[in-house]
Length: 492
Figure 1 (cartoon, rainbow, N blue to C red):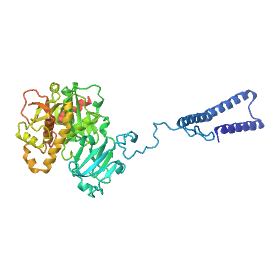
Figure 2: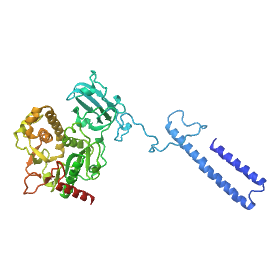
Figure 3: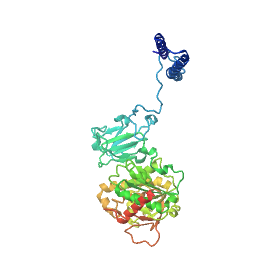
Figure 4: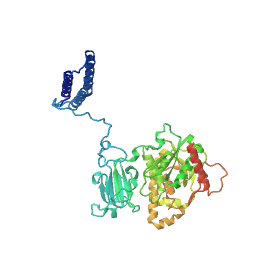
């Protein structure tokens, strides 16, 4: 029944009620008839306003919407005998969860924003260095982006999990690595523009991958404050580490030293944390989180080079002209501005490494070098003062040489024994830094006493960087006091 018919029915009912009252001797007196008619009129107008007019307005809105939608077609308009449908809900009201396509990711990008012409892919190889039989997958080969290794085979019918030796990710997204078939158990990631061809290691053992169409590096990290800074600092102090109670104390002491040494006047400070997501300290300390490389569980210090590379590959990349790299167990005692101002393109400054002067360093460089094999190797250690543009070149090389040294030391016991004097097992990242800078042609002014350690002889002159107390096996009292002071400073 139409709205007009409802009004007519209501009016007929009112007339019957009035006639019935008159037969019973009721009705309105002459004085009250005007008031009764007024009340009835107001009621009728109110009913029309609430029922009929909104319906007509909706009908006109729908007819206009349909007319715009069908403009240019021969049909145009809607049937006058059909009741117009209710108005559509606002476009920003999501009443039903949208089903994303198979490449939908957790970063928050809708499928409509994804360039489907460039899909993220992963290629498996039966030999290291991306050689041998290849097997390539895209999201079309997965179940909602997930691909389990169990039961899968190479094109030559070789078992995938048993014969996988290397892999290579390509495209705009990222590849999540999971430990088990049949369930998500995330532990590391591969990034096409960052990792390239990567060898496969059987520990930890990856048995599932998840393809993400968009890299998290393309989105600003909400808790990282420096991406929103309107000013650019002269230098940026950065270190890398993991999220743990052990490194939590180091983060507090490190940041405390940065604040009390007045480096915050001209510099910035960043903690690069290797993890799949931010931790609780990220709300107190400027933190950029870098998803873990698959070799980092085998050798934690790889996170230093890997974290820097991901920082540079992100939209949160550094803006300061000079980067100062330190270790987690460093804290600043005085401003390093004077040293930072001496940095130039191609010319950095750094502390002398403990193995400075060793002939083993040059001998090892001759074996592993890729470029500038006859150049001098500068035996440097943290703090490294380097130009931002130079670090962009050195970072990937640092990662490459670190992996090269560690992989060879793992399988070649004679090689490892020959260079044990350089502590190649644990110090591969230091050697990797030296070799990367030599490869890139970066020269260094080697500073003899920029840092002082608790195991060194007392220093008689001013130092810019002081190593925190080593905390192997526990937290020493002075280190604990420093971290407590840092907590107090942050609360003030």
